[in-house]
Amino acid sequence: MGTQIRLTLFGDVMAEQLDATNRLIAYYENLLTVNRPQSEVMAINDAAGKHPVQVSDATYTLTKRALQLSRQHFGFNATIGPLVKLWKIGFKGANVPSESAIKEKLALINPDQTDFNDQALSIFLKQSGMQLDLGGIAKGYIADRIADYWRAYGKRSGIIDLGGNLLLVGDSPAHQDRQWRIGVQDPSSERGQSILNVKIGPCSAVTSGIYERHLEVNGHSYHHILDSQTGYPKQNNLASITIFSKYSIDGEIETARLFFAGKPLAGWARDRPDIYGAVFVTRDRHVTIVGLEDATVTLLDESYQVQKEPKG
Image (cartoon, rainbow, N blue to C red; front, top):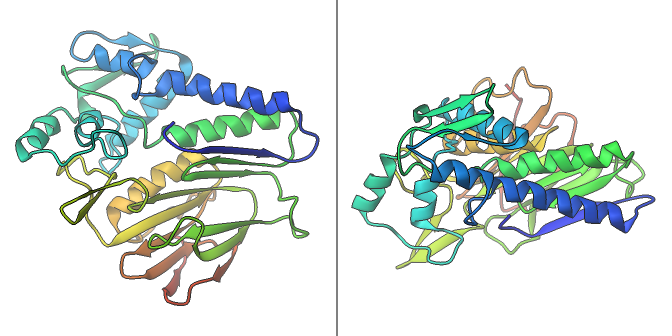
């Protein structure tokens, strides 16, 4: 999955339960990855411009949702695969492509040039050379499926950590108030150095930022959040955005929405009680906390200026 995975279960835990969880992750990765020659998503990509591809229920459900979201044009784009493969940021061979190469790939990025068929469970990319990349949504989907699996076995609490995706299941057994403590990373410091601490109940915390996967060329830093409109990394004043929500997949979606907006949006998540709030961190060391009314937020680094806004 291109990240370090940490799974923690509390209570009466058998090793087989964690082993089975790892097998579940491997199952979904085998369906959804585009970093190997073979997977169901790669089969869709290989058939671009030729024919629809019938896939499993899971792949179809996630891909259809990703394409529907992409058609809203708020930043998230599941057809961004050609651009990701061109830049390769975070992978071997990362480079700054030529303007002509970027322009060529941009012509292949269009979620409206796709079909999905509910009866056949098939996906079709209409133009040869198009490529899906579900990297902006798959980890959240997988984290939610792990939580489903744990609950099916009656597990009361656990931590699912898939890199930038954190899903806290049940109440925390480590504190008398049963609340979890989540640190929001300082984008300008080493991993583990937090700007603030959020005390909250069971939730997902998904962070997207410019500080993790990036490419340094001639004194310029290029991060991995690519803009399918320009072909280059999205440029704004944000260093990171963290979404607190019930489901991890929603955290993935909303980090994209707010990162591309570059600021809090009027009316954001007003009618979504399953989305608890967001923390914006800017390059010039400002923090904006939106929502999180039921959480306790403690500032740990006073060099940051903090303001709070209600959700919606």
